[in-house]
Image (cartoon, rainbow, N blue to C red; front, side, top):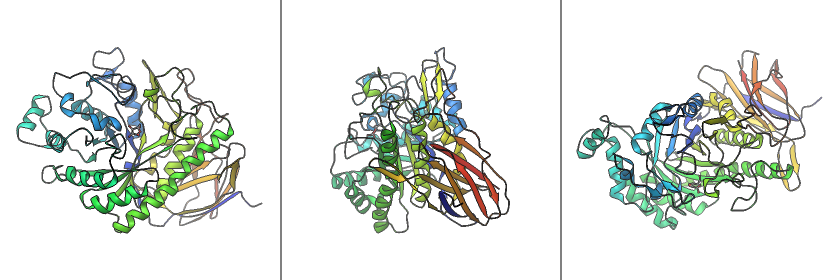
Length: 491
Ligand code: AHR
């Protein structure tokens, strides 16, 4: 019998690298993203290392988070770094997110300590919105310089050795909360700010320009044309939001139409990258400037009873599918997309982990990131797929999404997602260039579309071993359960 899904995979092909920085995480001063979620302070009864909670750090460390983007988001364009160093920390109002107080307890030194605890690199987003060129330049000097009075001040505050700042964002969403700029003005501002971001000889700081919102192709064109020579990357922000802005739909209470609409919105990322990348190709055919999709993920209405400014939402099997769809799409565009950051790491939007007081739970999204971990720095393999449609009302989409990579040890990994919540799919893949016939795997699914992991029942959506795949001759075959993510490891 013929399979529902057929594909060809060239396991010995060459391709772009699936950059580990695609697994970057975004941590903003927003709700309990930092305070409560990561930072509890040194005197907390919650076990911590220099203020950062041990349970959350351990969970994130297991993921191998390569880079953390901080302190925003919108927060970045009203953040003044001097308020977050030294003994005196002014208490401010977080005017963007809930109007709550911002104690400035987590500043540069604390954030750098967090990255060291995680073994991650820092991606700092600077303040263009209500800051100055001088303030931004001095922040970079404070962090990276081996000598001078800013370096002395850093030493006095406890860190003699300069830090490395490999990634720096020249503002955030300059078209919106970062200053409501026109693209032309933002490009000029980007040139000016970027000019003064200097690091010591022999070190590098990659400058990331504030890129487009969703399908604002004019923004991308203006930025790459007018500021492309001054930066190393353009960002792109696109959130998966069923329905129109502002997000009104529940993270957990949805029917099949809500499932289908959300997944089709996630699939839109493919077309968006294709078009933004085509514009970048025009001005940067050698692909020197990379695309950093540094905000993506689901955005629903906040959980009942939570501060709407905290963007706190539960995470279900549907979010797991959204994550897998994105990680597959990024493989297709790995020649241009060298970084992406899910929004956000802890307690905000499509989070990796949720906390409540001393409790912590890993979300379904966390488990997808764990399953895709072997993709880090592997070679992307071309996979051509013919899939039937999954069609619910007006939301029509290919039922199966896939990608494949070959890691440095020569193992091939195939990531598959079945978006159809009702129908298992038989899959048959013709593989070239593979010697062995061993295949093992992991499966992530759950009884319902909205199954979730709660503090009381943390194992609602967790990966299990999958032994339903076979390689016979040159054919890999399996049945992909309905509403599932499967990662196969071939040898
Ligand atoms: O992630 C939440 C917010 O979404 C960020 O602060 C902002 O950059 C975007 O609009």
